[in-house]
Amino acid sequence: MQLNKRIASIGLVFALTLSLSACGNWSHRDRNTAIGAGAGALGGAVLTNGSALGTVGGAAVGGIIGHQVSR
Image (cartoon, rainbow, N blue to C red; front, side, top):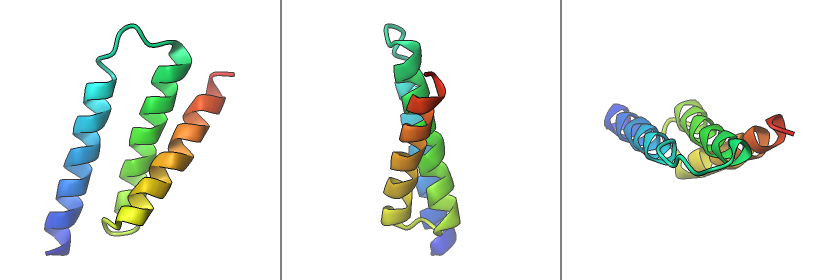
């Protein structure tokens, strides 16, 4: 059961990241923030075995890092 939850979380994060990257009128910083949030959510989901709190926390941290990278 845990494996299915992890696969579903990874698939959801991947689909969200892919759909956000299609926004061509975003600034470079906006794209970095979205990509960082997607990567952070993926990392958080993997590290916490699909925990919702881990996924959201990873997305928040990744989004902040992605935003700061483009400064």
